[in-house]
Length: 226
Image 1 (cartoon, rainbow, N blue to C red):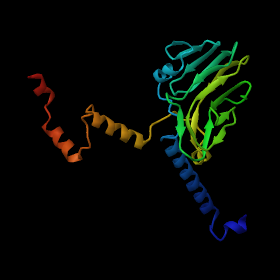
Image 2 (tube, rainbow, N blue to C red; image 1 turned 135 degrees about the horizontal axis):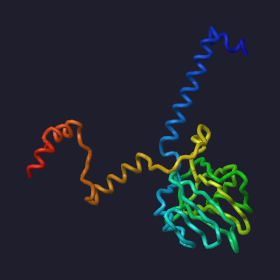
Image 3 (cartoon, rainbow, N blue to C red; image 1 turned 45 degrees about the vertical axis):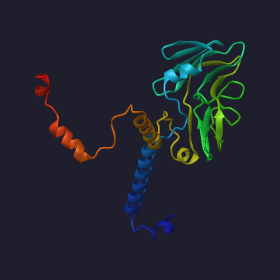
């Protein structure tokens, strides 16, 4: 090892500095990935999930399936599951209306707690992939259902599912769960759609025009005189 390092680094201190720089670069990359649009599975709100999961009852963010399993949606859109599936499988739908689609690529499905299986509990992308606690890989899908399954007869206690679909390249760098966040492109398209419908009055303004608007704005005292 020393023979390999010596032509590149003169001292052990240089080796330490290089290793530190490498670790810092890795940490910065992980932070960038985990802070962006990492999760491509668009679970956006409890309200949207309520429209999909109708074979039971809702109380705030808690869904009790008719098969006896309780699904609690947490603030980070993970789902805590308790109960025993009775009479048939209990399912919690995760894909929005129209199904889940993703373009050709190398994708990883993750988020099922360790210990799942095809006969107990899992996260499944219909006809495509099934995570039983060890992740699963796939290349694409179009308009398919994504569900958490608790198989008939299975008892489950405080198991937290963290459904995520991300690229393999991203997964190889960081396996940390992140909730869905829209990409910059999606946000841009939403703004254009709002402007086109006339419901958005904010357009791209130059810093100079913003500054001029602030300079000419009424003071609180002036507004109170009106």
